[in-house]
Image 1 (cartoon, one colour):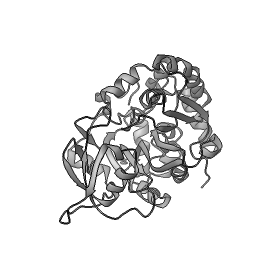
Image 2: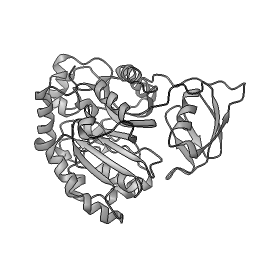
Image 3: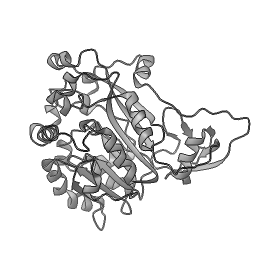
Image 4: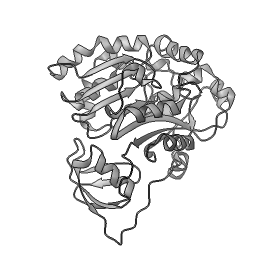
Length: 363
């Protein structure tokens, strides 16, 4: 497969997000506006500072904001109008930096227009955000160097690219050891038919490019990432009859994952860890993934990979760690079927009822 989408696919996506869509109300499904996670207070406050034009031109999946951001170097894959980048620029502070990569001229124009505005609103002496044109499968062409980034985020964008493996390879290349790819995307419960995968509107709506969820685990492993860790799962629906006829019985879910890049050869031993409550916005507990929630001051025994993640990543100073008791038993984090999670929870939601779309055309 090519490291870039086929020319017609690339042009279709550019046209859809650059010219066809003018507000989120123009979206034909709920896929691209599904809420990715609940927002902490400090994130809500940062979003309130984002310019209205930037917000109105944003078409992503809610917002994904990882924890522990101060002073970090962040990269946003498919930054669009820059809404997430500007909010993150506030959260990383003047000692951090955020880079947004997008291929759409119209979206980049909106983002670049408001760089100085946000610098002044944040009270920073110089801008700590920039936007560059490029393809997220070819970050080198956009000037992103090896091992230069602490955290990568992405909102419902990777599935717009035909070659997902190329995207994850590039993400792995530019991340520092201990770094993280933190992203929300749409996944299916089955391999999609050629009719779905070739549908122009469904491509732009984050449907046609959805991986069958197990494929993500295979790609992540082949690239070098540790096992993807699931944070949140939301059901998403295709409501328009003409589009539902195309997708048939296929089910879709919006899943928030975190993938870590670790130094090879880390110690294969469990640890007992105690969270100290120092992460901004999370003084009482830190919900790390579906397997681990760390309460302030409470000892938790974690598996060897989770131990290595906490030791090598930006979270190292937020935990006290020691070797786990010899009698402690742990299980490595494994594959998680998001559709089983939804089935077990009984969660089947008409996304129109969650106000995830801001206009009248949410399907």
